[in-house]
Image 1 (cartoon, one colour):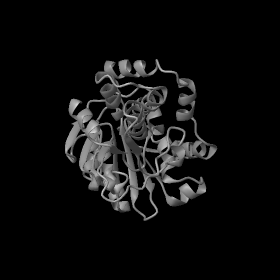
Image 2 (cartoon, one colour):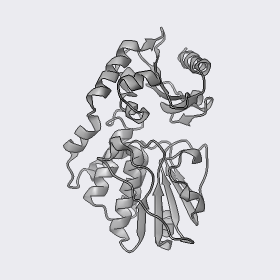
Image 3 (tube, helix red, strand yellow):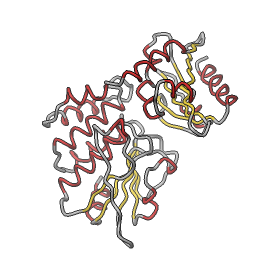
Length: 307
């Protein structure tokens, strides 16, 4: 922690990155850190970079910044397991790169790495950094970090939720932001997503040992007027069924390949994801499939994993 603070103090310009296709923890950690650093180092130029995900602008929006040629800057990359997923390539030209993450450290990039896979979220790590190092928090930072923790713990239901997670969340809850309003935003979705959720329940295939899958083709997404990013809100839907133990949602992309969102209640599935151009946490991973045949391979591996 002290090394990270020292590097922050040593740079006048700081870019904060996170992964592509962001979720609440990616934005919460990235923009929560931005709010903390702006509060404590007002003389510095601190920017959160990347594209704005329309479904998450209620949390935060990105800074649009053009750096002057030969600008010296620090890049801090939050919640991003590997380099292909980093949003905004300017980290490659940074004088120094810091990685802060809670995914398995399979891609050990960066000059300085703080990676704790046992943590519930990167937002939890950033909160710990601020409180341990005596940095001032404000309501905006607390709102973002709390949202990130809530998002990646499934509202404190997932196994990575520890006593430390609950303690740090309680410290954030002391700040003056509207927690019920934030919770409503995070749990609400539009009618077309609700209809897609119904489609998932109607079309979910469940094996005898509790594996489940559903394929969302481009035609289905068009039918419900949805983009891939908007399907993230239904990734937990199969897990509401008592019989389902592990599941995969195959979402067809514009180029024809499938983004595979994988979840499990108890049995680790990240090794399956690694075999198919992906990775992630033991019980929450993502993969990529490049044919219907590979879809079937993943489905068979998911079933075999439960035997």
